[in-house]
Image 1 (cartoon, rainbow, N blue to C red):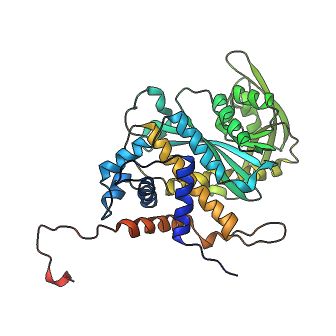
Image 2 (cartoon, one colour):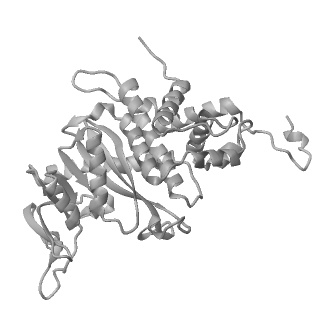
Image 3 (cartoon, rainbow, N blue to C red):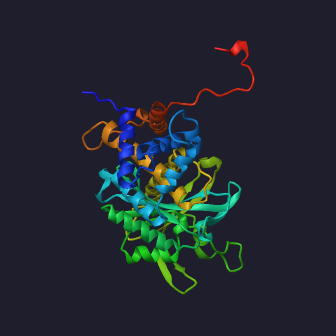
Length: 391
């Protein structure tokens, strides 16, 4: 028997999910909750602002009314964060329990402007897209049997201890009923406080090691983690980090030496250095292959940017809302593939990603908005239309 997934199904699923968990309410008679969500989906599909998406539709509320409706449905960052995480958890029913891997990462969205109410709203980092100011978001990404989905999201402020951010994310992972067997982290989390947190929580982790310290041409020889850069063969080791406060943390080290073989246009030998704790890695090559599964989180962020409505507001809560909605849309896309479009097979389902690309899902949501409000395809001209193009 064959079934048909329509744009009405996709729109109803997504709208009801956001209405229930984000608690979207009617603003005015001209802008009820369903209208606001339809216009927001149109902005996500077109990668424009909510006002721009509204202005291009023929009927419906004015852009100013929609802007006020969005602000009225945007609570404080703390409340919004809690609601967004409930929404994300609602779209991950297939990956509960123990055993999955969880990847943590920090994404920075460039920002060219001033802060809204406090300087700590803007995260500082290396220059990107012509700025050193960013809105920062940390997320937990679930990996199990090829099923990858965003599980938790958190807003990160300037100067906030990464260990506190990790603790907040891991608490939300446990709230979702997930007990990871291994946590994969970015090299930016290679700090004493983060490592000590995982060791105190008895949680196994794996992360690449940033190479710092003296180089081999120094009179005293190489130092710090840079000593592992000069290993000629792979193997295991140990390294102790020391905080400025005097606190220390010791981790196991795994070095994988391999030929670049033209990867990224380079040749020669390279050393991949990883820190681990709480588990026994089988081999250096297998550790590298295992860490590759973390790169799915980069794909998640790329797809998030493909369905994130744009804005010029300074309000960090509104920006968090748009990022959260984009991640929810991606989770809905993953859920549909897993629960509706997959082919049941003995042992594991077969995903058919070509059946519904994420851009097609967004176009389906846009089509519902166009059907509901029409499109402004006639523009008042100030000059006569030439006869040769007059229909």
